[in-house]
Picture 1 (cartoon, rainbow, N blue to C red):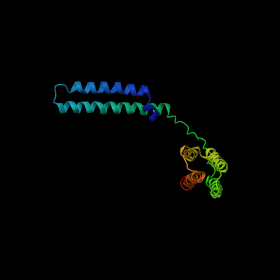
Picture 2: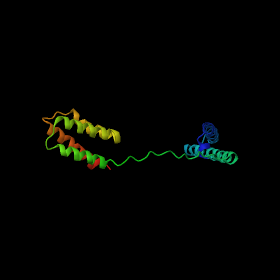
Picture 3: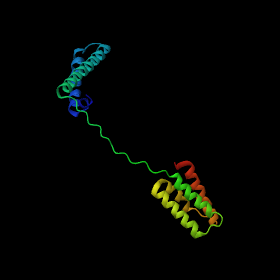
Picture 4: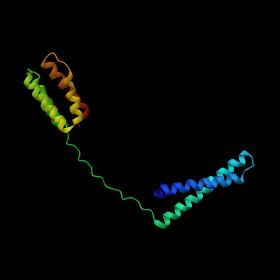
Length: 158
């Protein structure tokens, strides 16, 4: 029935029926008090609603209601768990903390960023945002990236 009730033709005819019914009942109550005229308008609205619902019911009975088939949308596969991979990168980064060299830190950051970009692009942006900061030395830089990766493991990696 919902399809019939929302069709443009049915709505247009309903509006016309309401206009005629309310106009007729208002004409009947002309010259009466305001209360009687308001009751006449309500009576016209009720009569028009009743008539149009009867017409909708008859249309559904005659033509049947065709419900659209529910489509089964394909679901994306769940991504693989990220925690073991990120924890492995975290362990590798912590191993560098003893004597960080620029080349080793750069390689570790690039590999970790590539892993995050492949698995969770949003986290790669969060991790890579540290590149815009200035650091005094490689130990401080590595410490900032390790802290960010610990946050990712704790808060986001499931």
